[in-house]
Image (cartoon, rainbow, N blue to C red):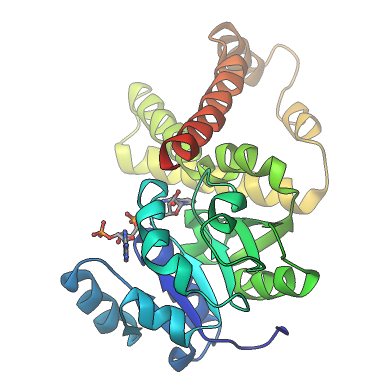
Amino acid sequence: MSAGVHTVAVIGAGKIGELMLSGLLRSGWPVDRLLATARRPARAEELTARYGVRVVDNLTAVDEAEVLAISVKPQDAAALLDEIGPKVPADKLVISLCAGLPSSFFSRRLPEGTPVVRVMTNTPALVDQAMTAISAGAHATGTHLALAEEMFKPLGATIRVPETQQDAVTALSGSGPAYFYLLVEAMTDAGILLGLPRQVAHDLIVQTAIGSAVMLRDSGEHPVKLREAVTSPAGTTISAIRELENHGVRAALLAALEAARDRARELAAQAE
Ligand SMILES: NC(=O)c1ccc[n+]([C@@H]2O[C@H](COP(=O)([O-])OP(=O)(O)OC[C@H]3O[C@@H](n4cnc5c(N)ncnc54)[C@H](OP(=O)(O)O)[C@@H]3O)[C@@H](O)[C@H]2O)c1
């Protein structure tokens, strides 16, 4: 299988599957090279109305597509693989977007030799700012990884990681947008506490988040350096930072990400 436009079937096109479909279409992937599957007829109609994409049953997708992107919930993956696994010809590329599930989960349920690539993306794919981590599973070659990259690059940044790091990636960047949204929500509340109108507080913090993120990405500076530049002696920022340290924000983040990583492992165990 060489890189180039293949027919891609998004199997279980829910939130993440839809992000992938819409991103591929925005990047110019021909709609007649995309298929989707859904469990409910209403969802199938919605996808066709929104994207003009052909929604087919799972076995038709297996038959017609060269790349199968599996985006069902981890707990639905075993039932799906019971249905399609034995019917997947070993020359198809299977890309899993399922959090926590190791590529071996799929390999055990697919014909010997089927290449599997494990991918963890995130919801900023909706605005072409995803962070997508890509790992080779069994039988996946450099060409398969390149093909996965070609599909996810239009949605944002991509990185290749060993599969052993994917549960950590899930905790960090897969769930990551939620942590930032929580922070923005809490800081907006803090602005209200200080007497700002909600919309003003929201606008201030959203633009501050964007500005800080762009500086982190583009300046090449370590975050400590960037923080020091805002932290003058006996100033306002250091007073706030003392409170953040007093309340254990750093320790809370370490514990939170460990909990997310452990939950990814639990979901994988339950899916077996
Ligand atoms: N949401 C995130 O931020 C995020 C980030 C990274 C990775 N992920 C991973 O992406 C995967 C999907 O998550 P999601 O949030 O997109 O879930 P979701 O919205 O529930 O999407 C899953 C879709 O698969 C459909 N489905 C289930 N079994 C099926 C089957 N046998 N045949 C056809 N369709 C089937 C579901 O149908 P129904 O509508 O009938 O349930 C649903 O529409 C998960 O494995 C998750 O771990 C999610």
